[in-house]
Image (tube, rainbow over all chains, first blue to last red; front, side, top):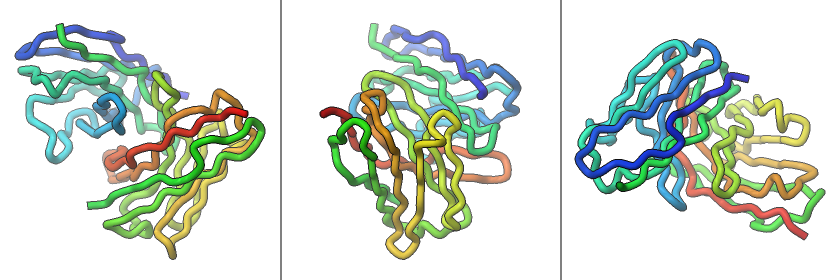
Length: 108
Length: 122
């Protein structure tokens, strides 16, 4: 299996801050990397697919980058509604999908 | 706008079989542009892909669960289903049914059901 490791596991920030979450794959996955946001009691929501493509309807303050094994999710100008848990997910191995362990973004 | 809704028992006895159904609305389950998956999340933990199914009935399951998982599709009712046998407390989780977009350059989970909590307990 391809292992996905996110860092940090948790993060405190303030409204208006810029934050970066990283995700590392245990082997190269090209750009087959997606990011999701999950709020308590809700299903995950797709933010970014193919490492850097913004899903329709997602605010432009969310951006993704990276290729190969190292990827980042950046949130600029944090808004109150952005405090949530974020997961990365690889889809390189067809139909053998794995997720990172999650990063909880909390209000400072 | 495709919507997905899980249904099934919220409580399953250990060693029995967990059975869930996902009803797809707002689109056809028989589209060749995407396929369907089950993902679960134990309370307070991360996400685990269980398996996927095409409208043709072809399935792919997680190696860690493969021997216990059966996923099927019912195109006439626009539904797909999950069966997980020999359950234990470790199978207690929120189970999500998900639509999977599959393009030439990306594969991603773009539409999720609300999730249903299944507890394994006697």
